[in-house]
Length: 261
Image 1 (cartoon, rainbow, N blue to C red):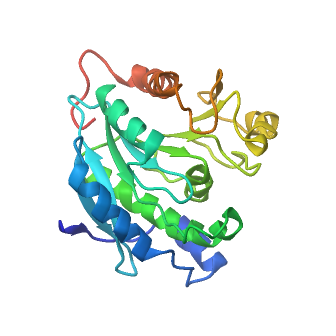
Image 2: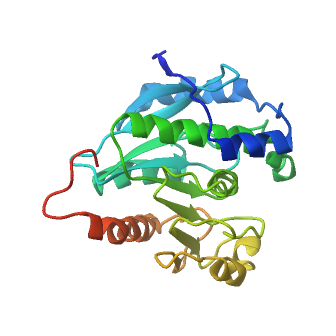
């Protein structure tokens, strides 16, 4: 196992949030996380496994893939009961590297397979800590522009972090934000991306989500004929994400891409 990137102090806003919810939050299924790490790390072809260490000393897997002349660093957050290289998440983390973005896909907290989405909010503070650690890791590598790219329940988890308006996060790409959540209170530019054939509770909140986008650079986009996991629409998904990020950073790039990203 590689050396873990150590926990650093959380921003005051996140500490306040954790104290509000409770100083001790629920632990996920760490054994399940370890089984996945053992299964997927030998087969990683793009990027390298790293381990980040939480305040409770739990070490979770990240897959760090560096782009050539990177434009930005991205933290990738998967949905419920998955891992940092599963399905469309593996596609996002690899194809966005090809598009010029360094990616750090992290293991989000999970419960056992038989536990439903209703229980997952108890893991949101844990998720917020992991996202903060991932952002800090990218910052330590010299990335001045960092975005969160999340999917499904990972987008709900990311909202818990983004609602603190972390100063080190440039933007948030939220794919298929579930359970009727909106972006109210979040100041960063947001891409609200969803599929035409997405889950009902994603589609039912489209209007509310759009109304909650207050940053002038935010966008809401539909991927035609795409379901919740964007199967057979991965190219359209990647193009929408990379186009949004490219447009967002274009005014900040003069000539060749700046050093320190």
